[in-house]
Image (cartoon, rainbow over the protein chains, first blue to last red):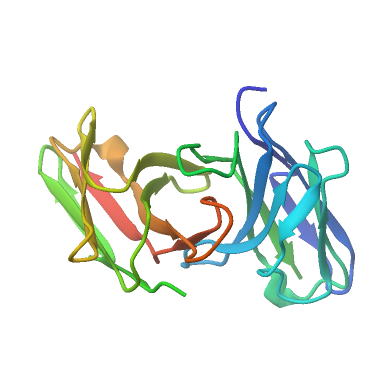
Length: 115
Length: 112
């Protein structure tokens, strides 16, 4: 596709369940980022991939959160034992390289609601 | 961690008015992003700048590195400009320019 694609666009799950959120970056983009945006707040960094490896996962809030990018393209953010506080919009972004002159392209996000 | 402060938090304007949104930051940076987010939609990158001024259509972004301040201007505003405008900067010492710290956003509403 032409842009960053995130699926599903909306996800409602019960407390304690496991969820997976998918991000399809722009083809050829090596850098991929996950952010979380709570209501009324700016996004917060979660994790950054360069290729297949997680170059920086310092933003993951706890060990219930995990992300993979096995082939260096599609990434999946996985949340175990979801809590109501995990409800937020999860945003994915990609760029051709992680460098200064490489624009970021964002997806439309996945709105996660934990009931 | 860099602290970003945007002002105003909410801005209402009439169509045609000149709009200014401000962003101040606490720690020296290499670049600053201005982003636009429509309700229910994703984020669009408007500008990335490290000095001076950039212009794209009716949008102008300026940055003063010494004063740690950036502004986003919209000329001849239109209702379709209604959105949240967010400034963001790369985390200091980070290995990637995409690892950003975001401001809280300015909600702009332009009435016809």
